[in-house]
Image (cartoon, rainbow, N blue to C red; front, side, top):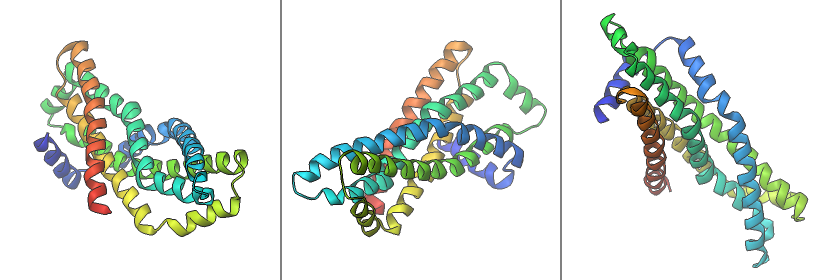
Length: 235
């Protein structure tokens, strides 16, 4: 897998692929994931608002709800949950697409015609994932914060001024920056694992299904593990 990643990074520098291929992958990985990202973000923010309110109310600090919701989303939940959603929706599809091309010998045909599969198949997906994940994370954060506002302010009666004022006071640029760095690295992980598992998929439908399952599981675990190490570094 390390050799595959180095080969991909070399291909990104030497021949990143046509812009039209990159835009097509951005549409597939990013735009088509918007619905599941917005839905997940909305209910995540609402749950944070609900749980956070009853916890803070015990200490008479329900005015800090905006800070709790925004920091939780921007630092951790936004990057991680958006990456997990994209892994399940787009990462599995990337593996299946390349895996089917492998077992149907389309990749072998490209190599026979002296066409680099990394240029046409792998590089556009890497670039698209690195661009799409931070944007999806930003959307996740915004929708989640308004989900918490909907529950905290409209349902539970938290002062709307204190909700946004405490959020403004608590969130710093390093929090936003660390979340974007995490999303960028998660995009690399998702594309890396998805392309690798598909590129070396076994023969037949069973091989593709096994590669797809392994891709989703491995990418999800790597996202969570890498999140811990990045958090310990960026704090």
